[in-house]
Structures are given as C-alpha cells and as structure tokens.
Length: 346
Image (tube, rainbow, N blue to C red; front, side):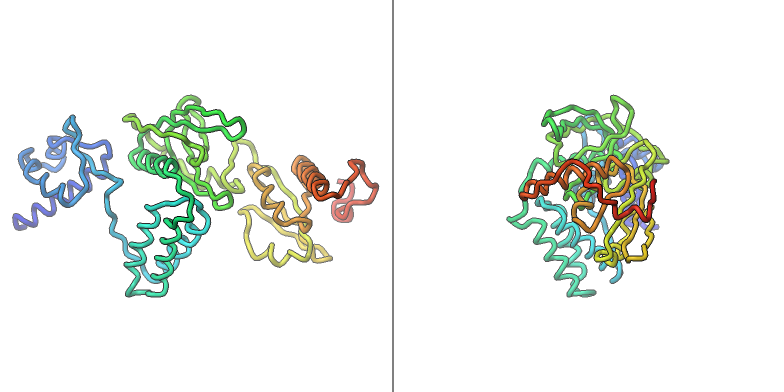
C-alpha cells in the first residue's frame, strides 16, 4: 500500500472510530487504538478536519460534529417513491417550518433529477412547502428538536422544561431520550424518554417543551428497548403498563366499505352483520386517544364498549345537540338499542 493509500485508509478509520465514540477521544487514544504514534495522528488531523466536521475540545478530546456530518445515500426508483410518499406526509401533516427537512428533500430532489425527473420535481415542491412563509415559524420548537436530536444521537442526558397541558404549569425533568415519534393525527412530535427521577418511561409533546439543556452525562439505551413493543397497543402515541382495553364499535353499512379499506389497528377484528353494518373490535392501550377518530365518523359509528368510552361519547353527543339547539332529555326513552339483537342482555 502506498503512503497516500495508507493515509486515506487511516483517515477512514479515524472517522469510524470517532463515530463510535460520540464523547470524543484524545489524539493519544486515537493513536493507541489505530496502532500508530501520536505524531502520526497529529499530522493527519489537519487533513481529517478538512474532510469531516470535527470539534476539538479544550480538554484535548476530538469528536465529530454530528449535526454537520454528511451521509452518502443512494436510492433505487422504488426506494425513491417510498421517500416521496414519506416526504408528502411530512409536508402535509407538520405545520411548523423545518429548514432541515426542506434541505434534505431538496438534496433528494436533485439526486433524482436524472433517474426520475417527475418524482424529483414533486419532492422539491414538498421541500418548498416545508419552509414556505405560510408555515408556522416556531424557532423555539426547531431549537428544541435540534437539541433533542443531538442528545439522542450522542446519548447525553438532558434537562427539560415542559409546559403542562391542563394547568399550563412548567415542570422540570431530567431525561434520557430513547425515541422521537411523530404523530400525524395531532400534527405533533413526541419525545419518549426515561425519567431519571422516577426511573419510568415518560412521553412529552415536543411542541410544549420550552427549553432543553444538554449535559455531559451519558446513558445507555437498553438493548431490549423497542419502540414498536412500547407502542404496540397504542392507538397513536399513548401507552400504558396496564393491559389493553377492548373497544367495540358498530359502523353503519354506509361506511362499511371505507372502514374495510384501511387497517386501523394491529389487533382489529371485523364482523359483518346481516344488514351490512360492521362490528369492529380492537384492544387499545388508552381508548380516550381514539375519541377524535370516533367523532370523525359522526352518527355512522356507535361506541358499544367499554362503558366509560360509550358514556363519554353520549355526553359529547348531548352537548353537541344542545349547542345546535336540539335539547335532549337525560332520561332513557325506553326505546330498544339497535344492538340488542346482536348482544342480547349482555
């Protein structure tokens, strides 16, 4: 191997080594791990910093700036279509400006110009949506997301100030970020983290986080942690340590076709009745999270069980009727339920 090839190989090994050690390493530590003298690393450092975004700390540690590190990615046509669909969801379901997302989509659009020019143009249009002036400009949200992303990537604990939804009170948390999850229905983003004060998992809406402070304390995400398991029974983002609750809904025949076009939950089961209506069941971690979805079906969806969810929807229906001038008695009418034939006296 020539001298130039040897140097290029060493720079690549330094890159891999520093990516594996986000906390950074000194020149002596790099030299020891690569089996060369410290003077060799010192000479190569200048060339390394020209190729990679490196930070040299006051204590001599060198690390890669992950917020500036560029990834080389190649897509097939069908992979590009998958990214296009994801970019459209991102552009249409997130209401805040995100220059990072826009920049990423533009790079993808440029890369696709020769392979798929039509897809390329639409990806670049999605980028324009992400940083359009009509999007909500929320620099605090963007700063919080950037800090949490860096903390998650480098596994650094964070101090967070989070505003409560109900009381509006700002609470302090000391957290270990485990996952960041978007929620399309609410057009929101959520942090899933371990609370150092309680040792339990906690989910915080990032839009309500007012400040994030990165610390130098490191943490390890357990090898068995899998967000798919954590959110397996969730309707969206809510999960619980308790057993999931079985939800039973009845859908009118007029919406049966639309209902069957989509798999709404991994545990769902459908039973078609003689009149064409459908009994739909699923085991959900927190049924309350389903309420906006149930509302959207209007009178074409009836909550059968659980009782608490049914009573919640009954109360909402009564208040809505009164809001529009329909005053309904709170006493039972004596009329049999449309579900009596199916459920009997259950």
